[in-house]
Amino acid sequence: MNRLLLLNGPNINLLGKREKEVYGKFTLHDIEIEVADLAQKHGHELDCFQSNHEGELIDRLHQANGKYTGIVFNPAAYTHTSIALRDAIMAIDTPVIEVHISNVHKREAFRHKSMLASACYGQVVGFGLKSYRLAALAFLESK
Image (cartoon, rainbow, N blue to C red):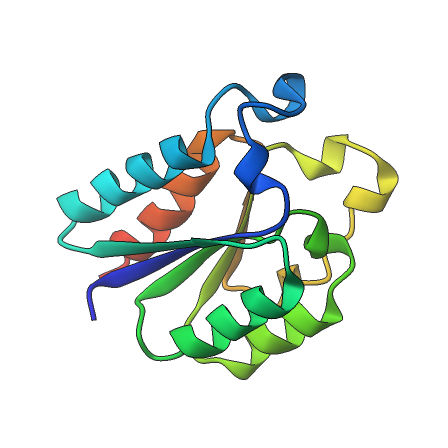
């Protein structure tokens, strides 16, 4: 089971086009290539999935159970609203690391609370594209 899942939530497909001052100029494709290369160097394969729909993300979490070393997950805005995603993370055995490109704790007050953090193995925020690398490394170097 040398596989990681890279899971991204709503509006992450618009990276590179939206709020570049917050999220940078890189794209979702750039993230996927970066993490896939890192995983490959550590003998892992990477599967990627992005959706703007909460139910599809929940389905992917369910399907991922037992198939991956870990899940790197940027739930985006669902971080602050989705008890359903929290329940899905709690329902599976595969560890999940919550990732955010920006430092959500330096942003609007409503972004300071994550509904998912307590259900996750860990959380990485504020390092841009490197947030994804750091989360992936947590899984890749834990063996």
